[in-house]
Amino acid sequence: MQPLIEILSHNENKELQAAATGAIWKCAASPENAKELQKGDVISKLVSILTEQPEEVLVNVVGALGEMAMDKNNITLIRKTGGIQLLIALLTGTNEKLLINTTRALGHIAEDKDSASTIERNDGVRLLWSLLMMKNPNVQESAAWALCPCIENANESGELVRSFVGGLELVISLLRSPSMGVRAAICGVISKIAKDEENLAVITDHGVVPLLSELAYTTDDSLRRTLAEAVARCCCWATNRIDFGKNGAVEPMVCYLKSEDPAVQCAAAKALYQLSRHPENCVTMHAAGAVKYLVDLVSSNNPELQEAASSCVANIRRIALAYVKGQQERHENPVAVRQQPKLSNSKKSSTVTMDTY
Image (tube, rainbow, N blue to C red; front, side):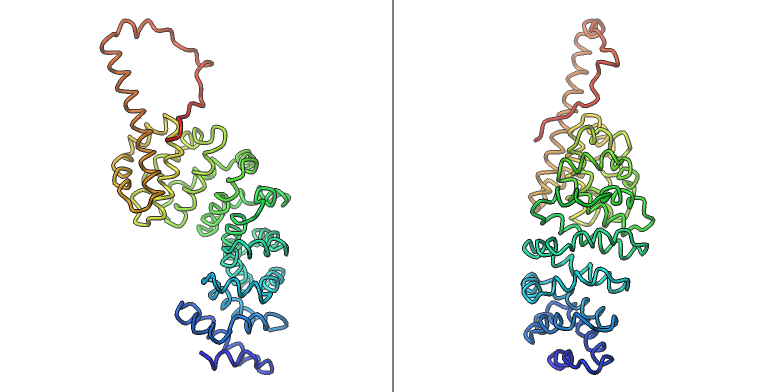
């Protein structure tokens, strides 16, 4: 590894430098190799050549930094050597390969809260958001994934998101993208945006519920996970959980519980729990066979999955018991049931929900 690192300082031979940085990028994909590379102080050397280089070299350098950033200890080194500011400066370019590598690197770096703050202070979040308008779906997807930890770790994420004029409308419009990868990444962004009540209200007005519901029949696990996370978050506003049921999102989401990906199962259980807080959705889940899968998942080693699955079963059980009790009352006293006054349609509530379990 050391000979490769030494070549980084050979600024006079750009072809050699491009070859060396490309080799370092590929080697850094292995965690073991990344550790060996850092013994030679590779991060500071890579950061030092982030300016005034041919794009071929920059693509490799940024790719290598993105791989090195998979280790959180290295993120601190990238920040302390001024690498974040230099990476953000590259977001104004037009080379699509470079943009993809840069957004990917910043996405890994933003997993660290202090580094996410540095990205925000240096206008990195705005530049990432602007890349969602690019025509290349790979750039859009990579930028969207990078935005997820930036929003998650922002000090005032709600205010940050609202500061981008037209930003929420742009995000919602990308749910119609023909690219599966873009839709999955955008669902991830929505799951972060929806943590803020005011932003959730805005995206609800922009039609996020029917658009997410249209995607519910997907069989792609990468989309299923982030879609379920977005649905769970969006249920927490107004009549959204009822509207998801009306738009047919409940039944296909039960199928997510059969996924072999534990992350998909966990996200689906959380979404179904939120949806189960409306009685009619419980009926749909029961009819779709959700109880069997949920009961199996209660024995999971994942505490979050256990809680979501058991709470969802509890809600379905409550509705089932209420139905059985009603049937018994009708059987025991049919005359009294027939004499009960009927509510007019105008009196019936469309917003009945269940308490949290």
